[in-house]
Length: 431
Figure 1: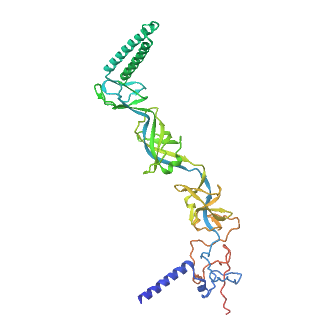
Figure 2: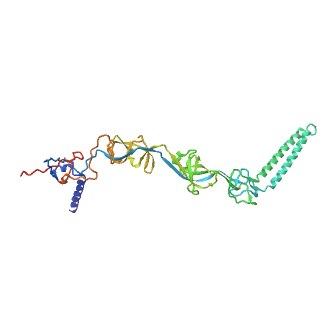
Figure 3: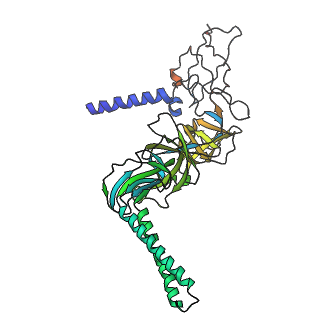
């Protein structure tokens, strides 16, 4: 029993809510008696006939069944350039850097540089013990002199029978061998001096006089610091931005607020199979030697497109066909498909055939249909035809006709808005 009562009450509540919101169905209204409202003030001219309320339609504060126009917010289609930037973290390396090594083993007898010294190509950095090599040069020189004197003597006696042609040829060969031995001795002597191979700045070295070095040991490093390379990695989607000479901007926490300009000089020819990124090198100027190899930099690449249509994000709607925007032409709404290219904040750059300046719907597009008449919020209808019939305020609620009191001033639904209908007068008592 309680369940039955609960269901009846629920049905009554739902029905009352529906009638209070949307009005009573026409079939029910036709069964109700239509009362003639009594005029609040008498009319001096006499009796006026009231207009009856058609079945299924309401008067007064009710909303019409369907508005002729849809209120939307529009704006002109604009174009703008899209600026995108890619950021990466990298570190610097010298454009030219060498590790100076010893070609031979020996004891250091001279140290001619200190850390951070600037050196020229060919400057002697370290001198190794070269006593033996100097003696070998003197011996080779003496042997060359002796061979040269023998050759001269043989040449002076070549016309006599004392010296044969064979002896003369042997003397010439002896001179050549002695000269080669002298050159070998000089090379060995030269190797005892460790020289700078490039122009640059010397790094830190812990070697001192008396230290023994073996062949192949690294004695010191030299870096060319007039220009530096920044090495960084970019994701796969940035491949389209990789071109020789593209500008980059770099900044380092060492010099807060300063920006160092550079340009791309090289990049790898393949992607890393794990990180799906490509290694890139950019060159920056460092003629003042403020920057050091190994410093950390934040890299930014910027790209600016040609002007292209841009719309607010609220203007883009979605359907089975994809993204689209609504345009307003001659007061009618039409949906145009678009391709979304970029997004930034509340703006969307799209590819569309609509020309710049076309009125597009930015708010209220969800309630539009193809070819629907539209009007702008707070303004006149967009269409060139005459003004549409105004409906009641959207904030008003429908009420059943039977509930409208006799004193209510209700305009006829069939009459244009703004016109006051005739008031019905009650029949006078013939008595």
